[in-house]
Image 1 (cartoon, rainbow, N blue to C red):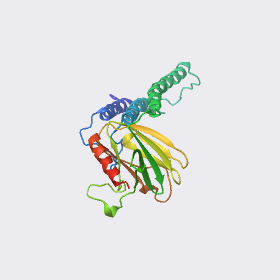
Image 2: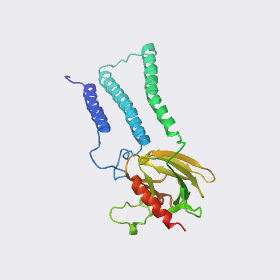
Image 3: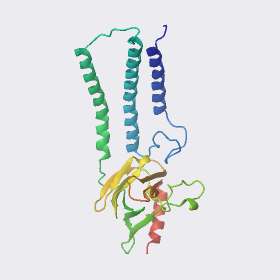
Image 4: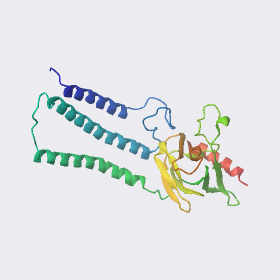
Length: 276
């Protein structure tokens, strides 16, 4: 035949690979996606350098996966076409091949090395702790809500800014608010600032997870875990508890609102006025 099945498969998967790579790297022209959307396949839009690094690493690994997929499918299609029974009724028996064995040992090792090097850099940066953060927030998990404590701001009676954050029921939602994701009191933080979050639990295991920020930290009773983040733009970011914690596990969302430093100062002043 003029064109074999293997050649057609190679062309199809080549264009699929190019299209996927271009779409993965193309800049977004739509509004930011900071919450889960119906039929969503990809990541939420990154709001921190950490999440941007995770997405870039995913795209880099996906590039290798596509190359491997195209190569394996090409070999499979070529073998099925050229070595079918009608053309090769008596197959050749090969029990040893030094060249091919060396190739399929060296090339996978090189691919794993190219994947591991950037992943190590990202892994170490995720574990980096900022010595002097601009803000420290303590997040305490309960069944089934979160308590937040801003210990950097206290009243004259040494009372710190503390509030509970409950999910807003479906009947109380305002137009535009998200079902099962909106809360009555959001975590407000300033943009472009290093923020430390200390996570713990008052009862059972919980997990404080924010996809757009690229963070997920377990809340363990009697233990303090911490994470640092740097939100580089304003916005409202949605997350949820990511550790099964009982009947209402799916009803304790997390909402972080990043605002300008002027708006954040006004919010802190208002919270201090509410203290006894």
